[in-house]
Length: 535
Image 1: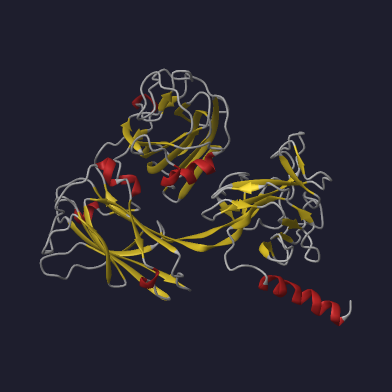
Image 2: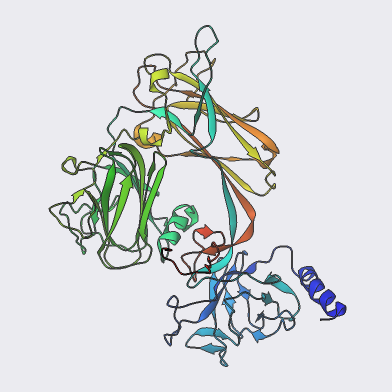
């Protein structure tokens, strides 16, 4: 290769970048370059596919726009006339080297995608202006895993963040204690807090369901959502559906006989596990679900991501210690019948049997609700507070290498029982149930019911409050009284970039918002000799 050729290849991405708008409304949001058995064409073929997304406020006519896998030929495939993409809409183009651009209502590009990585671009009608591109090439792809863009989300304060705390005394010389994560204690028996969300449109999988729950614009407007209730067990069914257990309660907000489509359910509780070791959990669902259980340094999850008729999914979780764990169960109903059951049995079980499994929360099964706020506390401070003082002071410190951009989203979420005030780097940012003036032994001005206390309060913080290096979130947290048996202060701080970044997506979502983002997979490990023992 000549020096002139090398220079031209190196210069090409810079030249193309100069042709791109600063923020295009229509982008290549997701694609699959190694489709084995995922999205199928109308003819039943598992072809590569490219998804376009319109994030702008109005419909865009894509007729005459171009897709290409060649930086030297940006006008390689022309979008058929009459291709309209509505605001916040998605369009899938199959990249299967088809000679026919439009068939069976589907768009088919005249090229295929390379699983080894290559250039990919969306160009305007002039065949020159790039509206989006993967430059100089997207990385190698994984079978049935998609690649695309999503905001980068970083958890700045979580259960592992160091915290120092003290319980003030009259002399003002109370010592600081070192710990991590949330602080609290509980003596109250809890229940599931179940939130019901009806949506305006189809829910394709559990990733989409959780994204829609977090997006109020996706909620229906026939009533105020979410509809929230407290339940001892999870055994919900519409009248047209049935499962394994017989409680068969209607979903929150629905009556016996109601049968609707497009809704999601989020259930949370503090789960008390009486004995360490394996426990088998069974989620019976119609359609899909995701179960997460975490605590004491362990994190477990299982899911059935897509829709289905009623079926049971079993998972064995090996708990390291007895104690309280935080549990979240997400569920969605797209169309047809709707059922959700949640049961468990001690030990390892390969199949469901009615003699062994009990609904989680039923005393006969052994797995009970702990005090609802207790499971959210990473450090128990009962010995320092209960019967001594209702006030606790705490500081969570975190380090940032870079500061957020002005249009990034910084969310401060806090679960609290019963009052608090918080400041970031000396600037007050949030408060609730705080007396004035504040004394060394002040108590919260009001109590918060447990169902309310475990529902996080969320505050948007300006990027200007953050600084490179060490940042300090200082909190004064108050219980209702020194004798109150339930106390919690659990802060969380997340940073979501306005700019989107490339990620892999384990569960592709063609025609819908991207789901949970993943970084690049670990490389395949090659060995020079076969496995076995040497003699």
